[in-house]
Amino acid sequence: MSIRTLDDLLAEGVSGRRVLVRADLNVPLDKQSGAITDDGRIRAVLPTLGALVEAGAKVVVCSHLGRPKGAPDPQFSLSPVADRLGELLGAPVRFATDTVGESARSTVADLADGQVALLENLRFNAGETSKDEAERGAFADQLAAFGDAYVDDAFGAVHRKHASVYDVPARLPHVAGRLVLREVEVLSKLTSEPERPYVVVLGGSKVSDKLAVIEALLPTVDRLLIGGGMCFTFLKAQGLEVGTSLLEKDMVETCRNLLERADGKILLPVDVVVADAFAPDAAHDTVRVDGIPSHRLGLDIGPETVAGFAAALSQAKTIFWNGPMGVFEMAAFAAGTRGIAEAITKADAFSVVGGGDSAAAVRALGLDESSFGHISTGGGASLEYLEGKTLPGIAALEN
Ligand code: 3PG
Ligand code: MG
Image: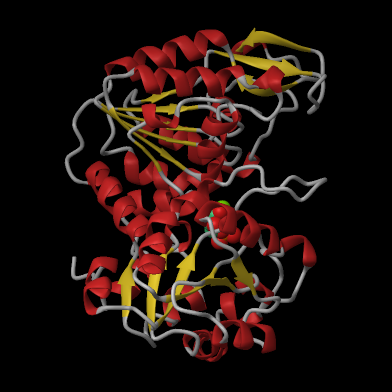
């Protein structure tokens, strides 16, 4: 890999130079209060930012948050993130109320050596995510004007061909930050000769989101455990009735085909927790998968399934987990996700947790993060890495 790193940049000396850092500060916010509910992604870029501050750089951080539609939208402002970042760095972070406008220009111009600024949400600008090269390029020109060098530490966004990820590094001397390097180093252990048995646990709501990774992993893994909302489309493919559970009708045939080719590697739930409604206080029971009542929906895997999955995990030497097993945000439907997470921590294996939701689940359930080998900050990015896809943000650093 011919990627230059933050250490290379530091060795050149960055004192007094403006360094533009693309971070992934896309953190979950509480819908009511707007408060940050999990600051894991902010903590994850501290090593890179801290090193630049210490070296006396003028640090200009940019990120997206959520999916605003190319125009300012206050609910997606990075302002609370600037405050939290300042607390964690132990020095105030200057916040620009636009991304490349007047506020950004003066904020960057006023930065002293060793100070940090955060620009407003990149996606408040249509050029960031545009499919049109010229429109993206014009926005990238404006961003690149804020830096003498560029550091990509936004692992969670390296799978996006966006201006700040793909086009800016073509315009500035560019290096990979500490987080991006660590993520790539860890994930490459999973793709090149993982120690066996290699067990993958996939959850989350949609088969369609995970189809490519299932296809890519089937030949490589020893066991693939499937829970979460997407298990119901697989159960349907086995000819079972799934009541009013989440179901992707147009994926049933695909799932049937996957099960046929899986040669017994895919393990599905044998029991599930079904409820009257999608609500924290809904009446619920555990049933066998062949006994799901027509008017009820499955919101978690059942205890017998947890035990079976845990047995497979206890044999593993390498584990990758992406996606919750149930609606863990509701206490009544959190036992499956908790049980699987605990089984992973108990296994004598190298374990990687991929994905914003699974990482947030680990922290929300109060599990000890250090008992996992690695908690990735990338959801889509880690999956696409495992699929063997070219990641635009990594490719841009290689050039
Ligand atoms: C994520 O949360 O997966 C990353 O921040 C990328 O966000 P996106 O899926 O909206 O591009
Ligand atoms: Mg995402």
